[in-house]
Length: 125
Image 1 (cartoon, rainbow, N blue to C red):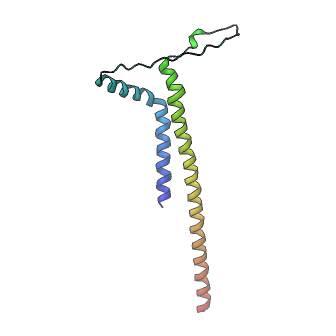
Image 2: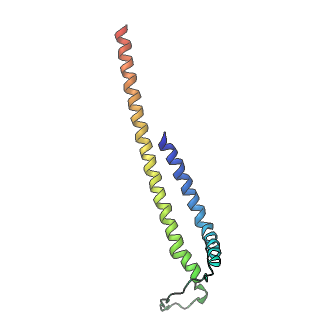
Image 3: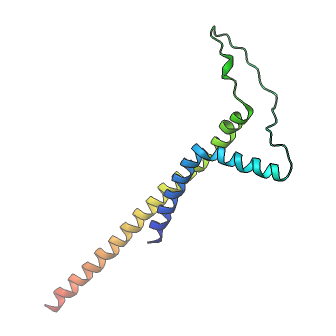
């Protein structure tokens, strides 16, 4: 059945994006830096204005500030990859439901054809 092929391909895509979530950002950055170098463009993340919040806690940790590159990875890259993974998982569930419906339909057809065959067999006796 073609739905089985679609289910397998969606599984492969989910696995790919789950691995890409872990290693893809550094690979994409390497490729982007190479392209920027070829085009003689500086490859820097522009820092936007930071929102400063007062922290009334006694143990303020200044080392928790993240780099602009890390901020981009967390707030954009991981968010987009998570959205893609969620979409693919919903698609996978829908394909599985379609496969079950298709299987039930086929079983019903087989059952009805077996019923007709047994009726014909009884008529010949």
